[in-house]
Length: 498
Image (spheres, rainbow, N blue to C red):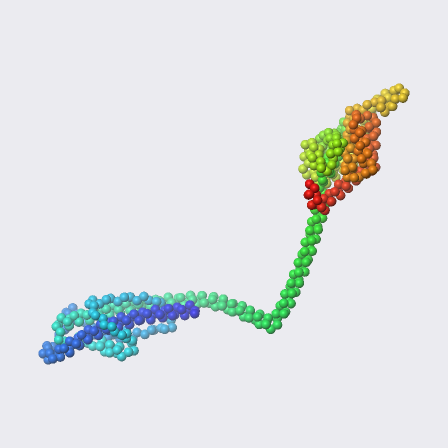
């Protein structure tokens, strides 16, 4: 049911209720008037015998109501009440609350009377009775004049009530007109809302029709085509998923490769230890260059740079040689030993391969400039006087044992002995040169057990030359790299070992 129809029904119901209340009030007034007339008619029948003796009729009303003719007003009111019909059944009317009527001044007993309609014969009789002229009543009533005046007063009261009812009717009509105007406004609003609702209804109907068409098409055989299309879509989705998985695997492989490369760029503990010792080597020999005036144009800058990285080169190398002699350069002690080798040097950011490359570059520069040979030659010049003294020694004595080394030369011999012990300990740990590694390690441990002499100078130079011929440092580098790659390929084993 639309809002307009609901409004029309509610308006019609309000008008019907209002008119029903009017008819009820009119019937009550008519019944009251009928009772009055019935009482008067009974008085007339009881006094028919005295009609001839009665004087002419007198006025029933009081002087203040002498000019009033109630009967036509009552007739007009009843005629208007009986002729009231709905003016517009099609348009909605607002619900109007009925106003209670003014109660009669003098209540009279109300016998039970059946409801009257506007089309029954009783209404005709009531209209005839209402058209009776109360002003021409004769004096045939057998009752006293007091009863006639009472009836006249009651009729006047009824007329006043009728006038009040008419006034209320006019007021109600005005309210009905206002309600009708309001109803028209509401109709316009409902119409504007109905346009939007109708648009939504059309859209819904179109969607429903589209669904019905799809259902009909599926019922006619298009279902197989849709299934085939869905299968094609599923196949393409699987292909896309396979390509995505393939790309993902490639990305993971690239990540692993990059991780390996990055791990190769990071030095392990053993390689960091080697970097520290080689820095000590560079710092010591550039310091000797400054002391002996070798390459004075660059010696100061090189000494300052490498000394900043290795402030105590001799002590660090000697400490490392002592640990190699005690056999502590194993994998279990690498982490502990590395902390002792730094001697207060901050190694943050030095664990990349760049540090190793810089050290190797410095060692190559040291070789190209022949710094070590120049230092040994300078030291040999200081021993010339001692060598000449040995030429005059008695026969049968060994000239190499005839002189002692200076403090500087002793430190140099001890420095190289410690270096040789460290290198051969690492070679033995990695299983390189198995036929000679252990013998060389034991030999250099025994050589460092006594004070250096001139023969030790020759031995350490032979040992350093042997390392170069065998390529020991290159073998150690490759062994460290292989160990790092094994750790990358088996991260679980390295984790469990730690």
